[in-house]
Length: 104
Image (cartoon, rainbow, N blue to C red; front, side, top):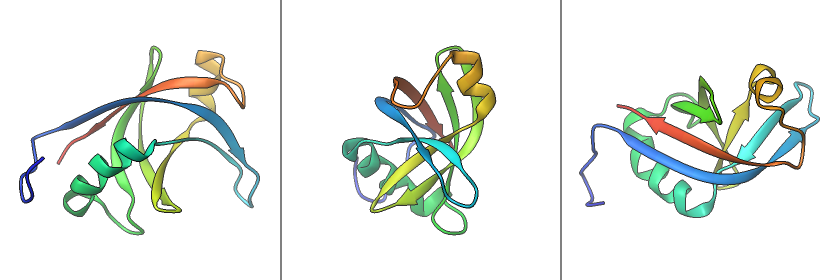
């Protein structure tokens, strides 16, 4: 990708493990791999809002939803709603394939 160029849409697909964060607001996540994080950083300046969040369309299996990627430790994490995990039969530790769409 050339510097200063941003396509109409960025589509990414990757696999990662489902993990659970037990904080004050517990949530399930999949961490975006380094290579895809690099692609997202190129788009972040144009689409991110507050705290570096990046709005995306996400899909695991046949279930799609809208969410925002969260920056964490120099990478991004995908929050996965309970309804998605139930619909797809996903448990903590399962490896899932995630498809993301970032649109300007």
